Image 1 (spheres, rainbow, N blue to C red):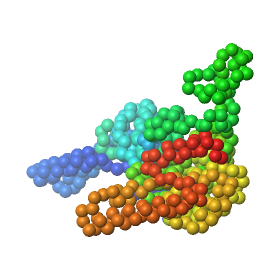
Image 2 (cartoon, one colour):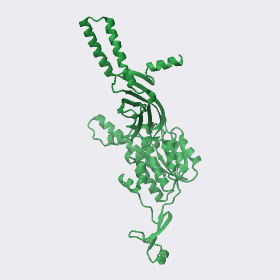
Image 3 (cartoon, one colour):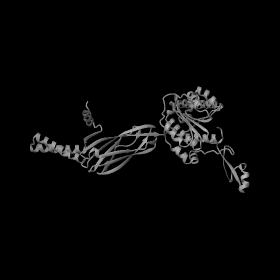
Length: 453
């Protein structure tokens, strides 16, 4: 097929451009045709006359096409943020410029990915020689990198008998990143964030950590921290202030295996783990610690080397924003062996994973017992609320009693396995999905304040 034939075939199928009659034209044409037929039967018009009148009506309607601006006179441009957050309402703007002389009515559809929620078409009116900006809301439900390629526009003149269709090609790359609401809340006010989530930042032990400054003594300070030499010089009661040591190494492990795809109230386990991991990273970086991140499933998927400074948070975000759940089991042995090769210094290892799956992984215990000599290990996961609901419900039938007993048996078995791991010095915790970030940050702060690293 030649290039000309392909172009004509594309026009026939309205692929990118075309001219179509409107509903208004079809009704008007049908009504006038009916009138002509009725008059023709009354006054004995010939069929040639009737056909000629219909053709005349069609040609008269084509005058409407002269009132519609040409395609080159319509300029459409999309304005979109390069990064949008998952599950949040975001706005995309479309700028329309009518360089023609006539006022038009338009319908617009943007070719956004199917995982974006929005309402189309957008409709409006724009006068000749004017510009107009319209915006619409989208909600991105799935993280990843997407390409928005085309904008479809249909417009008609004020008569509204015919309308033109045109497809504007404009490629925009959009990254859907995790929800950063909790991260922003922590960076804005850490203490308020913790209190809002039902916890508070624990104070460090008196006199422990690095010396920070000498300040005036206030009621409630530890008298043992009074700096008597400085007090004698200034003749005012002065006290030493200490803060946790900075420059510690924090390693965050994010499990991307099959069990992390389990759906929760608002997202799956991986989404919650990513959001919580970013909060912990922000907390550690804001305190001057080094943070590294490893995402894994069957093998290591992403590795971000340790660095400090709040700017490193953007590096972590760009590395992990597109990690997805894999339909395989987690290979804890491989990731721990890899961790030993890349993390030589003592660090706080924080693992986001499914506790139940991890408890029955025999090879992981062997590696962790070796790592415990050098690193401090802590694991956190989202508790199975359905399992606890089944264990707490009142049995009304024999089937319900069996489900309840099995659920209680699973909970007891998990407690025994956790106790066995904790005897080896390996700490772990399960919490509700809405408290995951708070619990992880609270444990990190408590660990740092007690100088356990």
